[in-house]
Structures are given as C-alpha cells and as structure tokens.
Length: 161
Image (tube, rainbow, N blue to C red):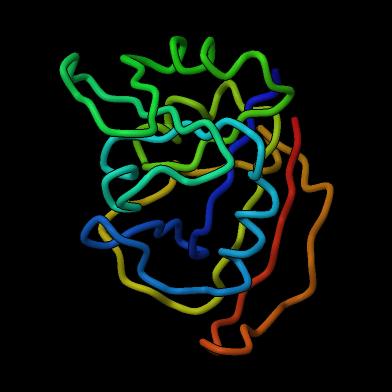
C-alpha cells in the first residue's frame, strides 16, 4: 500500500483556522473527491469532527487516543500503524489531516498532493515544514489557477520520494 498525503495549504503552511479550512475552494473540493473516491482516508478526530460526517465512497479511518471514541460510519484507530493496517488492502490510502496526523505520516508518505494557495490567509494550524529538495521531488506542477467562484489564486503540485 502506498501512503499519500493530500493537503491544501498556503505558501507559509497554513492549513486551518479555528478547526476549519480558512478558505472555500470549489475546484479543489471537486478534485479532492475525484482523487480520493474509493480509497481509504486516514484523518485525526478533529478533522473528522470538522467535516461532520463520514465521506461517502471511501473508508474513513479516524485516529484518536480516546479508546472509547465512536462515530457512525468510521473505523477508529489508536495510532498510524493501526490505521495503515486497516487501509492495507487498497493500493493507495490518503492522509487528509490534521497537522498532528500529517506530521506522523510525513516520513512514511510516498506522494504529496498539494493545493498551494497563493493568496494570504491567516491560520492557527500549519502543515509540517516541507523540504521538497531534500525529501521529495516535484513531478507535476500546474500553472497558476484563479478559482472561478471565490477568485482565490492557487496551483496544484505533486511530489514523490
């Protein structure tokens, strides 16, 4: 199984504010759904709760230190190794956040799918610092895109080890 990270972040690493995404980017949400459909998703409890429900068409694996945590439509794992065992039947599993889970998964991930937000957003949650030159090689990079509805500037990157 390949472990991939999928993340939308600003150039300075902002991924969240007050347990939510600081932006709404319609194109990116559609791309996220298309890329992850049919694959296991690994996320932290706060990310799961901020989404509010299991994402359909995907196995939702939620990491929490609370051994009594329960929610409908999810698999609960106590650590990343356990989550990866639940996801191992699939060819690719996606880590979708939050910051603590990204930090744990970063050394193990083979691929990073990044939506790089080029506009400035304030935040209180950050993606772990990425050293593309040392850890990953950018293999795909889109041109700058301006979202039709929200007028946010962004681009897509794919990086592999």
